[in-house]
Length: 79
Image (cartoon, rainbow, N blue to C red; front, side):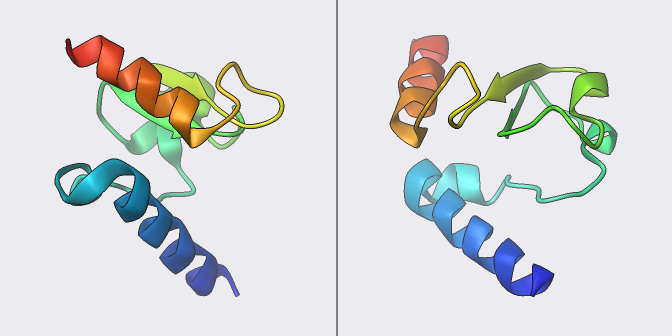
């Protein structure tokens, strides 16, 4: 179900983002209500277009095709 999906997404976030970022991970259907510099999503629906920070669009239709692409971009942002 949906709750199992959120659990899997959270575990993937922990695996790829590490503990520090994972503790700041928010999974939500109303993404425009989140505050932050970046939102990582494979679509621009459910408030992503209204999010105040930068949308990091990943997946087959996005600018960043893989999590490695996302991480490379983000690491470049902090250096």
